[in-house]
Length: 360
Image 1 (spheres, rainbow, N blue to C red):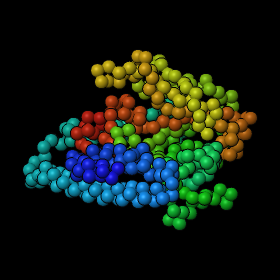
Image 2: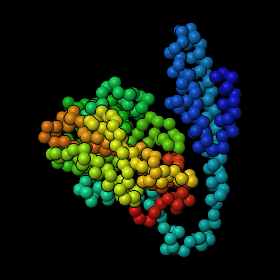
Image 3: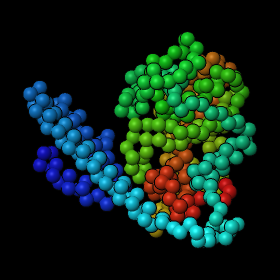
Image 4: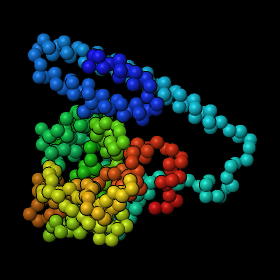
């Protein structure tokens, strides 16, 4: 690695933009990056070798961090200067577009438009909307959802934890005082909070930002939006879940009777659990939903685990239900042919004019 450092530094210094810099940083220092893997492999060495090799890798890491920081600052400054130069206008001139023309009207962001479309679908089927805090405690985010203490998702490399003394009182019951607080990793926490206030039968749908310690690249981001659904009632079974998901997929993608496949999977909070795939094909670089012999993973779902119901004070012998979770950005990318998730957050006017809408 020591011999590769000059080459890495040169590559960093010649990066054309911040996106290329982010991709390079992920390849070197992300979860599966070269430097990260080298640090993880230190455990296989002897104590003396570990000290020497560890010092070398840490020095390389520090040099890379300094190079990335300097290059990012340089690119940011350059981009700001170019933007200021390009956007300089004479404010005394008349506006470019007549007032009331379509070009002067704002557009709804494609994520917001899709969220409204999905809300409309579920509202028409008797669902009510529920919200919850983005800063959560371990009880609502993990324990109540039957996620054991040794689960990888509860480690620092997957979850953003927060110092408790920086938070205001969250009005928890004494029996549910948290060990620590975190940025919620899913919107399933909303279901737990909702069940503390109302009991079945119920149909809930929730939207919100969730956070996971992940790389920033074309298909991943540390923050994204998740849709969560919950149905609880007497006599609910897997057939009800399948019927709703099939109808949702057909409506969302505008394909009648879109082929849907349910694959057995595992989630701590559902039993049985399933991953849902939809049929697709790829032709001339385009993804075609609902036709062809390929399958595309869409969402996770399952019957609510009896332990989750018990934790929420619901008798699993009397009530059963199902839950499902979907990434909003993933749906948006599939529905609109977007290939880079980062475009959803850049606020580019040309992009918004192309993908945005005047109504959902």
